[in-house]
Amino acid sequence: MEAAQGTGRKESGVRTGIWLGCGLILGEFVRGRHGNEWLGPAPWFLLGLLIAATVAAAWSAQCIRLALALPHRWARRAAGLLNLLVVAAVLGAGLHWWYRSGQYLAAGLHSRTEVFRDQVTSMYPGTWQAYSWELSAVVALIPSLSALTESIPVEAAALALWLLPLVLWACTGTPGLRAGRTLAAGLAGGALCWAGLFAAGYVQHGRRPGSWAERAGAYSFFHTWLVMGAILASTLLTAAALAAVSRHSWLPRALPAAAVTQLLGLAGAFVLFSADGCLGRFSVMTDRCHWLPTAGRIYLGPITQTVMTPTILLAGCAALIGAGAGWGVRRLRRGSHVRPDPAGHPDGTSGRRQAPPPPPAPHARLRLISSGMVLVLAVPASLLTAAAHEAPSAAKPAGAAASVDAPDDPLGDLVDSPPTARKATIREWQMLAWLDHGGLTHYKRIADVITDVSDALTAAGKQKPRSNGKISLDTKKFSGLCGALVKRADDALAYFPVPDKELQKTWSGSLKGIARQGRICQDAMTRGDDDPYKTQADRSRAFSQALDEILKAVGRLTTILDKMTDVAAGST
Image 1 (cartoon, one colour):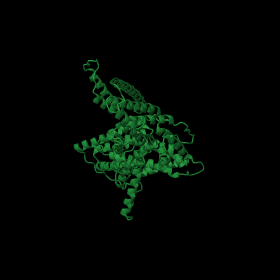
Image 2 (tube, rainbow, N blue to C red):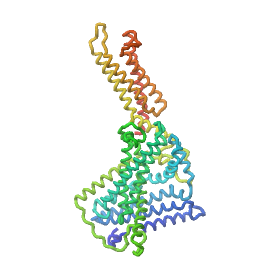
Image 3 (cartoon, one colour):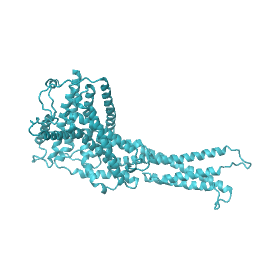
Image 4 (cartoon, rainbow, N blue to C red):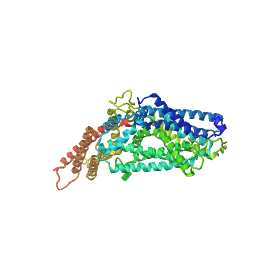
């Protein structure tokens, strides 16, 4: 680092990364894993090694240039050490992807795609004929994403890739990062991501199944992947676009912008899932308007675990491609009469020795603003990364035997459990969604009416008895309460069925009993021409029996609700 400061060279790191990547590719040829063939059936997957090495080298070189503006030697050396650790983790992530997925794709081993397809269709209920194209895309994407979500050093490196440039800017105020424009690009990417999320909701609403059980299967699975696709696509596009228009520090600028886009996308996904039902034509699962942050957390957990780290790593690759495209366009605009820049400088630097002007010292206000910006972005990103890593470790699905030459089963790492456990988890989520979206509300409305009936009976019992030793009841009031009870029970019966056949049978039977006895109670308190009760004693007896049966049915509802809560407790 000190030598670079003395010479003033502005290396982009691309040339070094290309040489490193070519060395890795040559090493794969020397290993001879493709038998007698020099190239495998799909050699273009080898470019993954080249891109990973180039991204690591370019990020290292450009962050070193930012770190040279630090005022103290110990700070520069600390930044250099952290730089080295991050680069090692990024290269490790690239090699991990290659050995887990890339080398088998390059060798043409696509046979396990059908295994992944069968496992997904067995874990999620529903009709899959309408999702054949989406299923193929998801199954092809699963191995690469899961290969980048398994290591604490890789997750920490993905966080440092965009956070370290912002910290250096906050400490030095160097103008090369153009943090204001970088943040604006991230906000624009976030707006694009939100548009994609709403578009996904609009499309899914149009093909939403009629029953809740069908929505909780294949339909919900693909909507979750559509959300992840919107976040991933908008983040990569933001990184590529910003790198294409940047001449200097294009990678330290592109990655923070990608991180802002990703955080806004995750926030948007949380809001949309929590407010589902209140969005009209963009609602996905239900049309009942409730604000349910629990549902948002349920969906956000697997989304964060799946895309949080891979998105930043892939954003670096997208930035490299965008920087190369922008450099080529600028070359074409300048014309061939201009002496070409040395190879490996997509940021337009010549590599000649130049004495960099000293950066201006940041003002106190700039330090405060920059530090606040770093904290605002770093805290939620760190919490999301930690939450994603603390998710239950993956287990391999049953029946997914792997040979020595086959990659480990990445689908098991993604879906968290074997098919039987996955079905149990889906049942837990369905039960929690059923309770949160209205099940508890319907029970509470019935319980409130029962409380009103109890209060009315207590008030009547405090009256002074008549000469015959009996008390009089306000027939109009009790008739209204019994009618309200019938209405509450009918509303609960019209709600989605309980996602458990046995519990649904008891639940609906109890509600029908409450509605039936409520009508008897209402008739007993109302006199009419077709009065079925001949005497007041018959009327009082029917009223008392109806109340007893209603209380028994409510007791059964309470017991069933406790069982439902136990089922849903595993998802919270």
